[in-house]
Length: 429
Image 1 (spheres, rainbow, N blue to C red):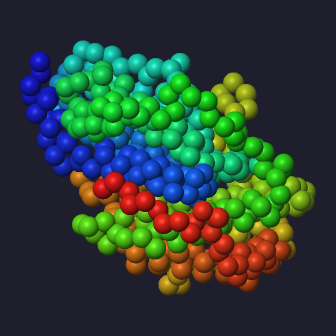
Image 2 (image 1 turned 120 degrees about the horizontal axis):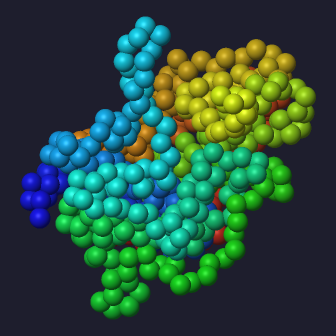
Image 3 (image 1 turned 60 degrees about the horizontal axis):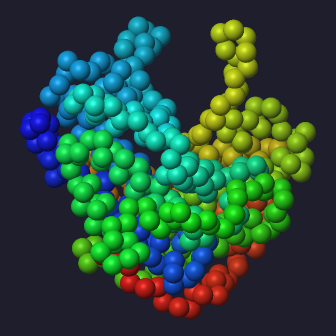
């Protein structure tokens, strides 16, 4: 037994256990709340996003523990191991200086490598159970998360409900269980986080029990072109603002002026902004593809193309920062659709609020070690909602050919889902 490593893990958990626990708690509570509004799209999307956020913050938590293991067992690790845990790559710039840049790591890579580096310190090996039911649920969850945040014409989540949200929560629990089983007792908090879950029967412990051995509805990620464009745009808009209305209508948590609902609403609100830009881009390219150069089309679809060392062509995803998307996409569409030059001014008050809201959203989803996860106050959520509306109002006024349809959405009265007259059950604290 390596008592020094157990102590280091305990020290990390004392400062950072919220990274492991809070988003999984939020996702579970949202899932519980969906029973009050069975298969409500907005709550279901929010639960999937918070479950995916729980996965990311847990990987941050595990990376922190692994870095402490590196300090205690430096002989077992090499520089690339440390850089991966820190999320950076080292390279030489044009002046011969050694510089660091943020590395591109997929969730699936981190899910395998981070716990494996922890296991290296204690002469164990972690293997992601790729063929298990839990791994398949995780793969579907990541695909759904990507379809919510970055929809494409061939990857759109048109129909989602309790089952998909339950799969997302189950997938995260089963993954954390596999890490715990490999690394126990060198990870702190997971026994309390996982083994106190009540299953479907009395005194039953139910990690990942919600969808175990069951068949759900056959709702698939669909092709956007098979759907009504009006329905797609309206669905994204209504889901986001319906979630904010739910958040505004319910009490905050006792220790803050925010809640799981305000956090979830903020994440879904900015997912909607990305989705609207992506959907409108693909709509306009489909209408008149010859109006766009190859470079413009690749930018709008977030695709990178290059030539390898052997002359082969490679294609990869090329996701852009939020600030670049909200500025550049309207500029490209104004040039190609409206035949005018347009640059949106984010220096205005609402523009700064839009960026502050997104930074707050990043604090929720990509929380930094040692820092508390933002609670997202009612005032902060209201500011973000107002900024998002002001952003689309500016686009509707200035880029009519591409965004004139936003008038209808901006002026529409939100009509809640039929079950929304029922109050949500108070989520477990």
